[in-house]
Length: 279
Length: 279
Image 1 (cartoon, one colour):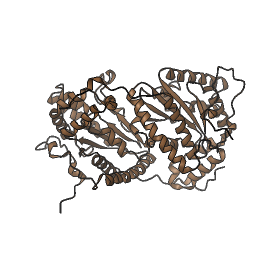
Image 2: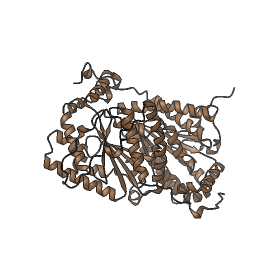
Image 3: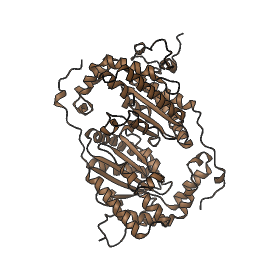
Image 4: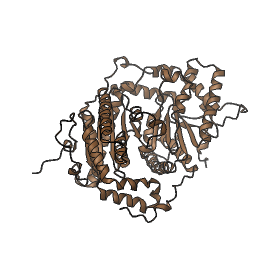
């Protein structure tokens, strides 16, 4: 009997201060795989709905305690489904309990600071579940592909990221990072679909086609970035994402496990309220 | 045949630079009324779901255009259902399209600025739908009830608010403000239910009981505040809110009408994308 896949099989090995013998291979992960699918799209949607209800309760508990914080980082090539993942995974979670932070190209003011300045400002507060839709990892990937960040500067940024994430973790933030992994062919189909549907043109930026031409460079930059920043306090997971329902279920399962590991409990009843009758 | 209720019957008359003959009466609105109920709780939920789907599309269109902004302000006494309204009305709206801003008691840094400073910073950007869960109106209500804002200072703050909201409106923001109106007896029951359920104690703040003792003062402060700040560019609506399903449907109907009046359309197709084949 085949071994059941485990979430940790999709975790990028931890960076261990340069002692690793070799880099992990992003190519070893099949974007079309559906290891956490429950069998059909319908059953995946049912499972997602089940997890959504649990996440809703767990998020309320996180909020009630006002102690821990949870940060989900979503990265992936254009059309890999970051927006769709957020919509699907959090459909049944109280919107009051979510803070979604989209990171766009930095503004002049943001560029006038270090690359983690705007990110730090958006770190989750006590009791918050925050989702980064893109993140500080763009500041590794884009300049690398454009040739504006040499190997040494890349390593320095990775080191700053590890130290920054260690600060967050040490201050009560549980971090989980997902790379939504699609194939080049799947991206081609999704981009073509957007072009072929004029009502979707507003979503389309011609620079997406430019980025696609650099596909291999982006894949290499992703591999190097994930390799250097997957840590026990902020692990990276590769999420096979050609199938949307699989992608959603896997991210939801990861987040559910992350929340369950926190062993959250509602704050105890207040003795002082016992027996009070409201006038 | 009785006249069908219209949303505008629940609009606070516009402030017109002191020429009004008399203040509107909050007491004239029955908190237990269900003028926009469709008949039963089930049919209200169905209607809410129908509006939710429309709001989802309209919000996407707002986002696609990146021009207009929409701001929903929610105010109401403790337990009036601000959180519940947000959860219910926006359940089917993409969480990526929402920004929910809860205003708590001001921090020392916030207090060191004028009372609109922290509010202005949270104003919706182009393409955004923003919800204020409490708002700058707390800065009229609370100090008035506590006796820290005399009539003249109250009027000055109202004037500043009108000017501030006029700036937002003039810059492309459509503002709609709802007071969730519950009865004193309904609040008693809701507070008592929270006390009687120890698992809900974390939601309970003893100061809620203190505020309740000032019920009449708060109602008077609400009336004066709404009276002085309902304008054609930022109207106030009184939402009968003893019934939760009615409250949700009415806020949803108001927001739907607000969005529909914007006559939003998706941006046109881009000629430059025509016929492109993705490699």
